[in-house]
Structure formats: structure tokens, C-alpha cells
Image (cartoon, rainbow, N blue to C red):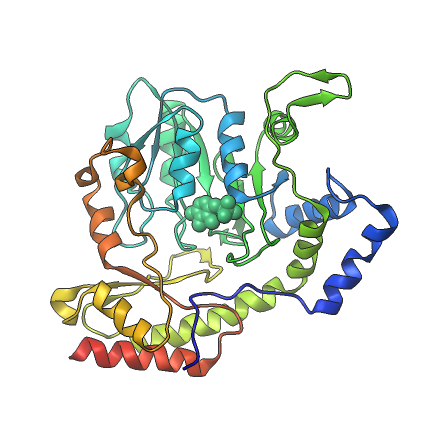
Length: 369
Ligand SMILES: *Cc1c(COP(=O)(O)O)cnc(C)c1O
């Protein structure tokens, strides 16, 4: 039985990558903001339509250092319906995450519940654009303005998304993109921060390079977050194919939508107004009372047929054992319900239609029984 994986990392034609890395053998410049790095930075600024961008070794480091660059203290409002990285980046900066619930339609932060969580210790909001669904950026912007809070978006899922024609990385004080192998656009491992204020850019540059100011002066306690030339070269190649890949994802999402839209007990993501999506994930919610089977039962059933799905995001980050019960998961009841119902189905740009058909057939027949 052939396995169907939940995702498959995109690769450019091998010859294209080899052609791209050849010049590295001339320069012997392998890392430290080399030519490939700088080329990719310029190309991404253009593609994402953002004024400033800084490349990183991975998305998590990008987020951790973006938070550090904002000089925050005290409490940060965020959501637990995310990957470990978001919450860890906050805590590793010595800040306290305050968990806000999510809205049941698109799984991003519930903007009606943010203000009640703001205290005199709150300094920022770190919302997540989940699965390529974007947050209510206009409301978040208003709240941040009223209470003088910084906003840093976890935009790991949001590469290339536009809202009203504007690149998603233009909202808030900064946005983090992940270029991990499993993401829509990747550099094997990698990430970036887009930001408004050029002072933040100077801080980020130093933070990713040990706090080095110049050859004889180190005036900050930095980390090492630099993207190397081989990763940047992979990014340059992948960027040439990204529009075609997003279009291929769109076609596959539409296939899923068509076949799964009227199944009782199955909730799909709604299309968001004014948003040009990147079709990065295909999550479904399974309501066992209407569907006749639980999320975990559908997970097992698909696995029996060699189909690999993910309970993404389950468990919630505020229930991780590393936090020793420090947070109360009942404070975020919608996130809790959704994390128990969600199943992310396989999706990648060259996914065969026979695989899509097989997955839909199994889901449809399982939900009726
Ligand atoms: C992938 C991901 C990250 C971390 O990115 P890496 O590049 O893997 O370090 C952070 N947040 C979310 C929501 C992610 O999906």
C-alpha cells in the first residue's frame, strides 16, 4: 500500500539548484550575509511587498529575536492554538503568555476577548495567522493603538498572503515567516521577520550576529541566527516556482471543498473576504455527534489506509507538560474544543488527484456509518 503523507517538501529541479550554488565554489563564501542571502532578501521584499525584511536560520529564532528586539516586559497576549514555537518564544524571552481564546470560524485570536485580558503589565499582542487564515488585523491594530501595545504576528503559515491587496507582513510592528521544509515556501530551514521600523532592523541584525557592532565592539548579547548560502540558494530557486505551486494547491483545496462541503458534522474553513490565500493547510473539524465518529477514529481509519494526517494543533500549548499546569486550559474553551476536533488532511502542490479522491472517499463513507 502506497503511503500518503500529510505534506511533501517542494524541491526545484536538481539541475536548477546545482546551477544556483555553483558560484559558491568561486567565492568560498558559505554564510554570514553572503551574495545569495542578500539576493534572496531583496527578492522576498519584493514578493511579500514589505519595506524591510531580515532573514534567519529558522522561523523560531526569527520570532524569538523579533520579540527580543521590541524590549518587552511583563505580559503578552497570545493564543494556545498554535505550534510550540509561538509560546516558547514568549517564555524564552522571560515574558508571561496570557492566553486568549480563538474564534470558532477561522481559529485565530478572538478579538472580542483581548481587551478583558489587558492589565497594566501587558506590553504586546502576539497573534497567529492560523493555516493561512488571517487574524482580524484591523481590530488588533485598533486595540494596540488604544492601549499602546506592540503587535508581532506569527505569520509562519501566511507566506505570500495579501489582505486587500497588501502583503500580510505589513501589519503590526513585525511579522515572522517560517521557511521550514514543510511550509508553502522553504529554504530547507529558515525564516524571516518583516518589520516597520528600521531601528528594529538594526537590532535584529545584531541579535542574529552575536551582538557584534563592528570588528572591535560587541555591545549586545546576541544569538547566532544567520541563514547560510545553501539555504538562501534553495530559497531563490523555490521562489521561481512559488506562484505555480500556490495555484496547484488552490486547485487541490477546491477539490476537497467540493467533495466535503456538505458532509454532516464536517466543518471546513470558510473563505475569508478580501484575502488572497496561500492554501497552506487543509484542516477539517469533526463533530462526532453529527458525523458518527470521533476525530481520533477518523485519524485511525485513514492511517489504516496508509493516509497520514495530523492533529494540528493538538494538544494546545497551554496544556504542555513542560508548563506543569501553570495555565488553565478551560480559560480557552473554544481552542480546547477545536483542538479535540481538528484533523489536517494531506496537501501539497503536486499531490496526485487519485490520492485526494481516495481520502475523500474514505472520509465520506466513514462519516455516514
Ligand atoms: C513552523 C512554525 C513555526 C516555527 O518555524 P520554524 O521555521 O520551524 O522554526 C512557528 N509558528 C508556527 C505557527 C509554525 O507553524
